Length: 320
Image 1 (tube, rainbow, N blue to C red):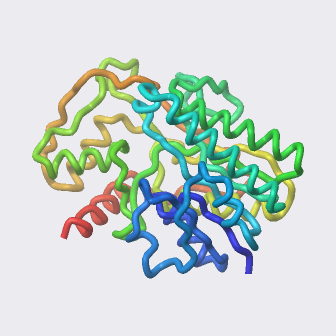
Image 2: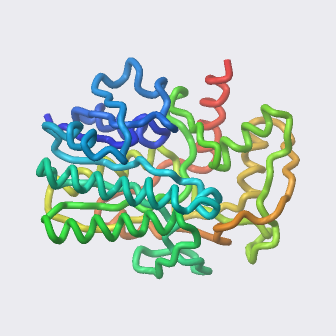
């Protein structure tokens, strides 16, 4: 039975990925510093859990004993914070991947699936962004992910690694109540938090060149994203590969449309408040998922209502 090291496996996405791997017959070892990861996502579910920091290369080396492959999801990811504190993001995200690749090299681990982001792309008016489109990140966060992709590719070439980087678009939903999204920066949990605090949810700007003036994003259910990781892992296991793939739904929704659907799901009038733009935000990001469908046989299954409904069910369960 193959063993996978999931770095950031106690996080929102990481826990979903880890559980699917475990259910698919893999032995899973989770490595997480629990700065954003939660104990409730691993307790009683995963037996092999290591508390460690990606900036500690020795800890990463130790964690890779008997490991066949790595899925790396640990990173700082708040776009606005990356603009105000870029050093934190370069140190953690780029430093972390350097340490991880160094530990893999030392241990002879040759397979990696990397968590990247749609934030690597230049702003585009295209109906769907392809992997070959220009990559000009708007934020230090996006730049750290692009640098990480390049580092992985260079090491893959030099040391014959098999590697896939998955460029996520916006992730929502939950497959289990305890796995719900606790991020302070993602749209859906921010709306829930505002509602619980009797505040109006905020929309960062309504003067973008979009259909209703608010930013348009591509949203994907976290369960569909976990499936993409499983297929990517099987691909790096089957042959030597060095590729990047978009992972999204292929559809775009504005912030206003998202809040409208959240209002419908919750059965309340959220009455959002428009505030100033947020640094580092692109007007529109919608994915082309043709390549991942063709190469890996992956496609999303959940629609927007299902994504929001599952998010709200997890939020309610955790609030009881």
